[in-house]
Amino acid sequence: MSEGMSLRGPKGGRTLWQKIVDLSLTDVSVLVKGIDDDSIEELERILLEADFGVDATMDLVEGLESAARRGKVKTEADLRGLLSDRIREMLKEPDVAGGPQEPEFRVGDGGLPYVILVLGVNGTGKTTTTAKLARRAVDAGLDVTLAATDTFRSGAQEQLRIWADRLGAGFVGGQSGGDPASVAFDAAESALARGADVLIIDTAGRLHTQSNLMEELRKIDRVVGRLVDGAPHERLLVVDATAGQNVLNQVKEFGEGLPLTGVALTKYDSTARGGTAVAVSRQFGVPVRWLGTGESATDLQPFDADAYLGKLLG
Ligand SMILES: Nc1nc2c(ncn2[C@@H]2O[C@H](COP(=O)(O)OP(=O)(O)OP(=O)(O)O)[C@@H](O)[C@H]2O)c(=O)[nH]1
Ligand SMILES: [Mg+2]
Image (cartoon, rainbow, N blue to C red; front, side, top):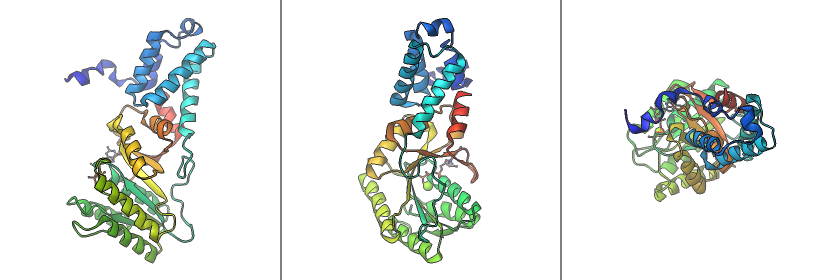
């Protein structure tokens, strides 16, 4: 076993809540006096390890310290209530279109398709998430067109075409090596012509450091905006929940290239660390809209703060 793995040790299976409770923070005699420094440090470590990020972690720890000093945290229920209230507030902070209260697909706007641009680094699950979103839209009785703008990676076109066929969605792709923005243009034209309700544009994986590829993304974005008023209505960054702190870098860097309206957190089924959603909304004000929980088309859930908190704090 590697050093990194053994760090998790036999206690690796405990939930976040169990770890917090094990700190003896709920020992009344401790809490009336305030929380000792070791426990605070330990709590910080637990939250950072669970991917809450520095801002949200400091926020939670300071809130807890001050509540304990005022004698407001005397029982386990007090502690749980305090953490849960503050986390809920942080999740509500996003105040942009596509926030947590938004409907899944805002269709019916002048008969124009609702356009979602799907972006992110390589292999995060963009194409799978595109298919999952299409599946939800089709199930809701909506007419969906999918656009495969990845003309670079061999197999990328075919991967999305297969999903489109399976789901009964329209499909627009391009020639190998062709201009991704012209695929997006063709797809928007096709969606308008067929009166599609939803157009989902899948893009090639890229790093924010590849400035030519970031420009290509902005071009796709501009092109659809020229054809469909207000499009893309949603710019959904797909991030891999197992990527830890890298997720925050990706939200930051892609957000500087294009104003993001939401995040899809994929592979949520493969991580025990659940704090990323809190970190993203606390640090960037971008709402986590979706959780990907597996590889099949139905493994996508709208982000729900209650369900999320339930899982996090038991
Ligand atoms: N367990 C799990 N696997 C997922 C999830 N979403 C995607 N995957 C898997 O992640 C791998 C990559 O998914 P893709 O959708 O091809 O990723 P991508 O971002 O389109 O990749 P590129 O186009 O190459 O950048 C595939 O094996 C998917 O089945 C998820 O929510 N859970
Ligand atoms: Mg892909």
